[in-house]
Image (cartoon, rainbow, N blue to C red):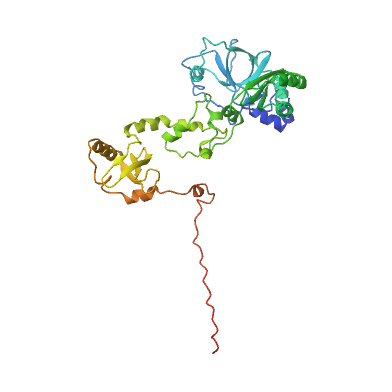
Length: 389
């Protein structure tokens, strides 16, 4: 199929496989890899090394969006990154893009937890021929309309599920329907309707909200591509305890990602905070002095400062206390001694530097604009008429 006959919708679907269409001369591999749009993209740092340390016949193959798999190059094909290959499927064959070969494949296998000796890896048949690629393009062009029609059928059958994506197999004999459901769904009737509608084999595969966000992709609040679509392939559970340990505000709008779940990045620095907090005393311990009892309010871990207030349920009159001083007061309280003050001298500049602002000001779109001084209107003096005697 010539590149000038490829529709825009088909180009977007092909791009989700990590490739772009190029005008070839009829030879094999008339489609090349586009590093800019492939999800879970990897880079082979040993690609230009003349003698790699370890060679292997296992190859990493990229399919639509975040779906990847490992295959054996049993025919010893001379493959390079970006080759379009036909691989073994059940049944028939599928079309994918080579993303990683050589020594780094063994490192990637360890990362995803795949044992090549115990796992039965499928085979790579051949490099994709022009006829294979043409049929592949035809299958890809059906995916969007199939997904829209399937959502209509699900709505007609009153099934409590959401169809997130549809992926056709390279030989156009099978399609995988990715769905999200909170409860167990009986979709036996749905499979019959879909098989009669599209005349293909149907496979239903359930995914979570994080997997759906990875397949769709997007930009996070940090301004970078979503981690779930760029490099994360194993999702670890995230709890609000991670936010509490890092002294983050428990605001669900700021802690939730585009998937509606807690952000995966809450776990990135968690171990660092846990190690840093080992030197801090427990926050439930109160500080007894001769003038008042002080209760913990918050902790600045990396500055080594704990903030206390004389009110147990209020953050008024906060006093910053170094960790060494807190430990000293706790030891004195254990001996039955109460110091006169929690600190001898309070750094007023440090207290003013912390400060607090309202949540409305933090989320305001004009918070970075320079504030212009308000113009005060001068009142006009009204001349009063003299009273007539």
